[in-house]
Length: 264
Image 1 (tube, rainbow, N blue to C red):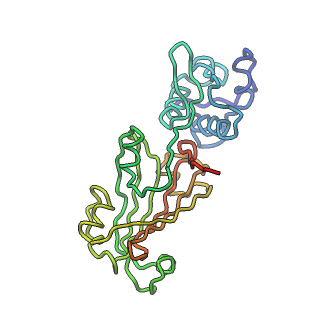
Image 2 (cartoon, helix red, strand yellow; image 1 turned 120 degrees about the horizontal axis):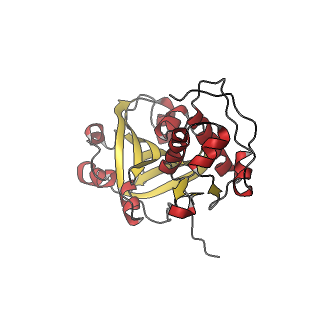
């Protein structure tokens, strides 16, 4: 780990970099590494709009000299922000704030995450966290079932092009779909429900709201502190109007945009 220095005063630099440098402060009295302090502060400037899309950031050398830290510290910070799709590098154009990835979800078709990503030209993958059979009074209430009813509960991390995009928690009514207790989570859940449970999901209700990431979500998205996210809640119904699936999907706020096409 790099030796720590006393946090320097605001540096004097050229006009192009002075704006961001004046807002960055390193605290040598905390255990948080410098690169994480910088990552958190730059992300906050991006989220607040103080660093809009297309803004140029100082080079690794300039920022390292101004803050009196090693270039390795700056490189690690910038690499993490690029990994989160917040920054991009364009050769001589330098490092810039990247426009958020637009993941648009249209109305009118119930589809799996993999189908949605494929239509966007992105490679979808999933990391299974847990797959359990549970009894949950609150979930039973959502389904209109007795509190002793059992549900299949899946917690999964959804990735697009290898990057975590969403943390999804899904519940399935085992009174309607018993095979879901043993589903291996491969392939489309909707195809599995139809082929193994005899259930075709024909309608859904979905809401969206702004939230701050929970501890589990921050861990999934590699956040060092709670950050804005979008929470999508969806109820999916069978052809006879029975609630089969309830999902809560939390999407990274900086990588997800929601658009609806409206007509007068």
